Image (cartoon, rainbow, N blue to C red; front, side, top):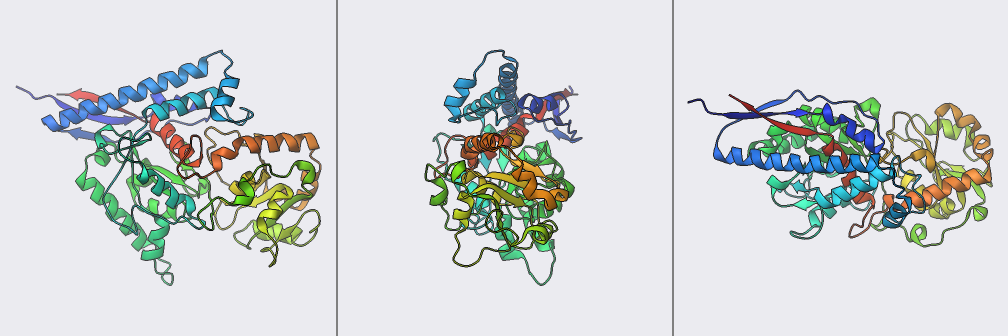
Length: 446
């Protein structure tokens, strides 16, 4: 008698259209990974649970696609539910809202418990890498049986989180004098190996339903040293640079957030903030001479027009950074050493229109957000004429952009505990979308 064996493979081709319904064009990703499973009772039970998970995700895909095809006008419902004044900030507001509701209803994340602080299960919460530590902390603080995406049963999980802090890894395992990433890659790789040996979940998908999160600029480089993670897993990164291997249909761009004391700045969260007529600066920037773009900005605009277009190489002592944001119509957000900048989130908090000057940067949550509705992107070649370009915009257009900024603001705020549609949950939603874009299919083999 021949025993029935089961195997499965990762198939993206059919469901690659899914992100189109959200409004984000992607191409199919084919992961040519074949894993043969034994016919033991335990693994047959595991196959059954996997089938149930895929059935659950299939229902979510159907509901979102159905919502996208609906001719009903649900704008007011979405405005009231999300709490935004306009839905034009979304690529497809109906699809996003339904997708978010399906995430709240179904999505479960298992957090691997292996490892100890300081490298695992915690991260920095009071500096430029705040989002890394806060995401790990907030996901791990979700309690059993409490509402939320975390599950303590790995068999119920749709996705698996590697709670590793690249920022702390750099702090504790990197020798600055060596300029050698090898210890970082080896340490992170060892952790993945522990997960692979102890649990069956990585091996059944080659890591495709696993995700990591890194705010540190070196997150992409560390992950690149682990081939399956780099090629297959979902990488939630601040440094979302397509020229450095970031894949928008697989990876997640997250905002860089810098909280100096761990709390949202009170000046930028107290309503109402200054209106357009009370913003006397056309645009503002203060920061270091980092990377290839900022020196060009300084060459043309540093200290040239401090009464109307203030550009500083670091803000002089005694001047308040946030007060400049609140007095500005536009906030300049040039890339530094890497593409992302905390100034984008700070500009949004201050209801100041971000002016993004970057190359190869995939903007945060651009799978669902329509960035042209609340920001301006300019090329490096526009820097010499930047003041004139911004000054030429009509008041009505600036006000329209600022209304978009006000609407999108809640998606970039860190709350403790997390709240619906805030930055923590927007990151989870982006991971949810990537998981929906992945289908695991079980096939019988004899």
